[in-house]
Amino acid sequence: MVVDLGLSLGALVGVLISGGFVYGEIGRFATPQVSETRFDERREVFGYTAGLFVGIPLAVAFLLFLSSMSNAALPGAAIFLAALVGGTELAQWALLRSHYWGVGDSGPFYALGYRAGIAGIFSLAIVAQYLAGPVLTWHGIVLVLVESIAILMLEVAGALLSLPPSEPAGRKGGGPLPGAIFGAFGFFVLGVGSLSGLGSAEAETVAYAAVLVALAGGLLVYHRLRPMLETIPPPSAGAAPPARAVPPAYGRTDHRADPGGDDRLE
Image (cartoon, rainbow, N blue to C red; front, top):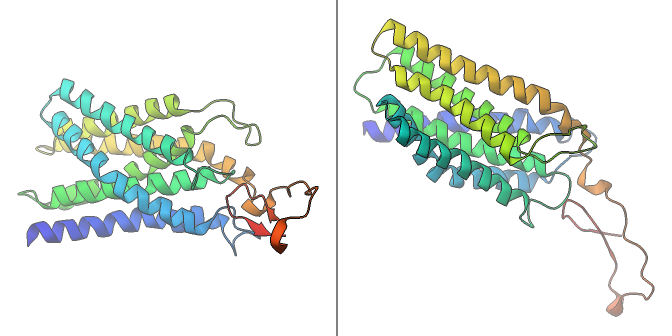
């Protein structure tokens, strides 16, 4: 019963934090906040859902990383951290090269939703793990909640940092390697808090400091890269295809080429 309650509360926290980000932050680029939605809303929801499923095996690596750090097993922690960061980068790489999500200029929005879903599962994992522990304190609960927000910011900042350079956005850097380095450093900082434990006032101070440093780093990088979202045009802004030399057979109409993959009748 306690395990079920922990999982339920963890799921609630994960959905509220990650879903709130998708609704509030990505939603500001959808109507009526803007004149025309900058992405396919259906694909955004599916991307977020896919992130929830992909986040399950990644959350296992995350928990094993934290466990290794708490036991000072640094070689094992390095292996699980590499699996966590490498798996996350590979997941985003595959998403943006798929036909469904990777066609057109709206990929950054889908990457953000995808990574937010992964962060939601991570939050579920750490909240459920803490609630299943033998001792619960208000300090520990607050720490886990702040850590969940820090994980979300590391994921979404890493999502934008992992995108390739973009001339319209004025970005000359970026890519999977910088994103992986940022993610490895951010999660390692979180792991330092687990390494210190919560057995004393000094250890709690170190744990809080580590979480706040990771949160600040994620917020800083995301704030710096956030303006690139303003440069993404709506999917319907694509140019019309050239006129056919021969009319289409069987009375069919031509379709407008939509970079977002949403073909529209002319």
